[in-house]
Image 1: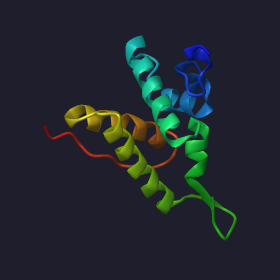
Image 2: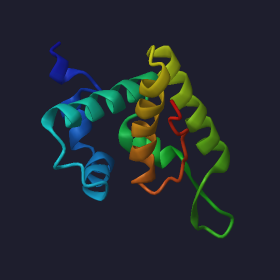
Image 3: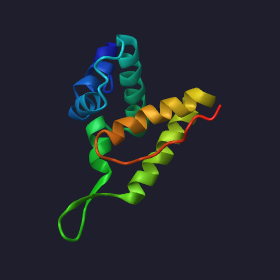
Image 4: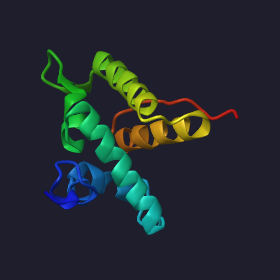
Length: 123
């Protein structure tokens, strides 16, 4: 199996509708190719960590209310935030890198309509 065949390869991550929305909304297309690849790899590694595709991450945070409307689940959002922190820690990121990389994943969620706030670097 080649790296491109992996379930959460940068190529497959890049094609997900939620990732396209993230790049469009956050205007990330003008970033350097190196920075784009870092974002794809980081999100792919996080997806592998939680066992969900980018689209599943976003859909899993939504719930249907009693009135039949769609809303963000507060409990699932808190669990996702904890999963991001766990992923960052298990990945060995520390200091500024831990904050920045966690917030890159949160940016993906924010630009897909999921308000989730990370820490600020106060180094």
